Image 1 (cartoon, one colour):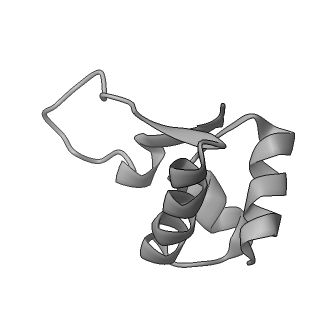
Image 2 (spheres, rainbow, N blue to C red):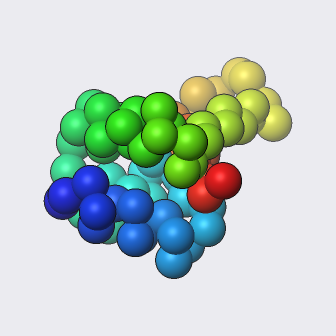
Length: 71
């Protein structure tokens, strides 16, 4: 995955979770976050943290709570 590939993916999808990104590019979440930070600093995308509706079971995939969207 390159920075340009990541940017094009988000431009096409408009909004994607960290889980979607790591699944699409078959990469580690930390690598994806690091690359996403580049585009956040440039003002091209923004991060949104979604709060789960429940708090008891913790069985949801935490990667689905980090949402990134094109600005």
